[in-house]
Figure 1 (cartoon, rainbow, N blue to C red):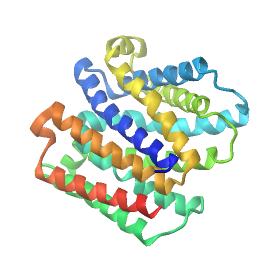
Figure 2: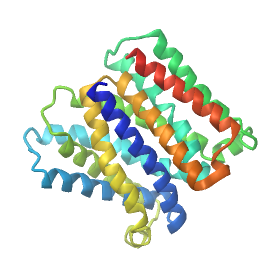
Figure 3: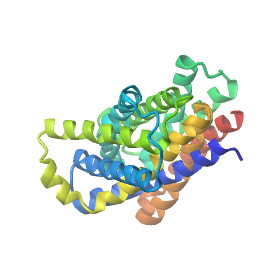
Figure 4: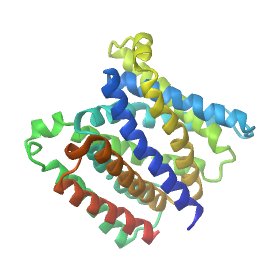
Length: 293
């Protein structure tokens, strides 16, 4: 098994655990998704920076140009997308959000083929269609069929997050390949930019950042620790392998872990026949894309 696939699978498992931890943290604290996102990503920034510092990771290559590029990635995801991501989890649960996030490889692969010259493959198109089919099945669950319910339950929020993640993956691949910056410092910049973006959004919406942070700790910090390791590993994987391989493999591992853990934690409300069928389709699509790569 190649290094990019091992890294992608590891990152995917951590992202899946993060989704369940995020729902637990939001339920336990009652904070808004903006505050929860800020605390999680700020914690992740500290984790990544502390890991880089204690491990003695070289800062060579970390100049104004590279900082600007990584800050742009962070402003997209986790920045602008993280509050939407947590709102979706809070609305429709981690397992269903995870399945909608399963559309991220579709966006990643299409954008990679369109903008950075990754090769077109018939199996990749079939895989993306299977991924989308899984999300459609969930959207048609009882109570999700009308447009108001579809939006109210967070499905569109989750799809918007998937698109942001797809853009992040392609941007990360384009901006990290052949760039001599250590992954842990690059990720620290990405996460710091994301935390700053989230803070600006939260304050502009009238949130009391200091009071909200006190309320969210320590529960949302658990999510932050997971992200603090998941993001560097994902960026490392994208710097080593094509988006068309890394994104689907990370997605498959994420779906397995989030559904397995959320059904254990939340029980029957996170487990239904439609959910299992959707899981099978999304996993098959991601696997087909990965094997093609």
